[in-house]
Length: 97
Image (cartoon, rainbow, N blue to C red; front, side, top):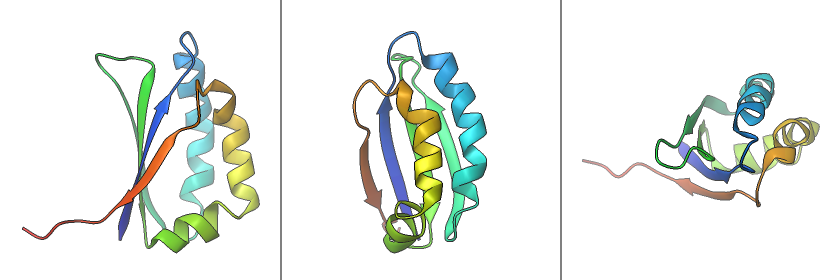
């Protein structure tokens, strides 16, 4: 399992519109093969900053099953117009305790 972490800065004033678009887009990403869970969080100190957390079976599930599919274009069409700049996206794996 890998965790996709996307830091998303939204155009100031678009926060509520972005959140509404995410509600629609959520079903698109969760239907992608290899997607385990999706969570969006909003900054307390920086209300225009959001963090998307997606658990994928693998990096390939994210890059191939989702990003290279028509679902990604649908997802981006809903939330992309609210981006202040391109999101910073990285993948992480758990560190054993």
